[in-house]
Length: 200
Ligand SMILES: [Zn+2]
Image (cartoon, rainbow, N blue to C red; front, top):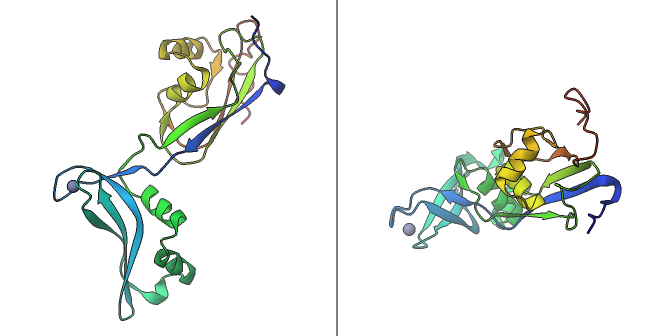
């Protein structure tokens, strides 16, 4: 069986968003430290002063708690459109507020989709440019993307990286959370030297 040559030797990998990350904070009732967004934002007006909270629920006991977004802010200090979006629990704003939390657990929030079903990086005779696109800013170890994308074990990926067959813009154990491009080359294709193509 010969491996199929991929069209134009370019591949697109997409880190698809499956859901929102869990918010890491301790529940005052049950001490569980995972909360999920309820999808709701609460706006409370006291005269011209506004409070805005993101409402989150405990992953175990479902107790709701409030994470301050704005406290005692004058109504004129808030953009009107943004206030309307708060009042309508706009899902894009909820997502933005969740992503802005300082401690998040991204487990189960993404999956990798590739167009590489017939490509075997260990046997390929063509170099390949891979574009990795992120739909969400989940921090993911580069080597994890490679093991999933190529269907290889970690040692196999390490071998390909160490031998220069996979050329990365980041360390394999770095966490990527934004788009990047890397190159792989087959055992018989001529890899550029260390000072070779590095254009982004
Ligand atoms: Zn709880």
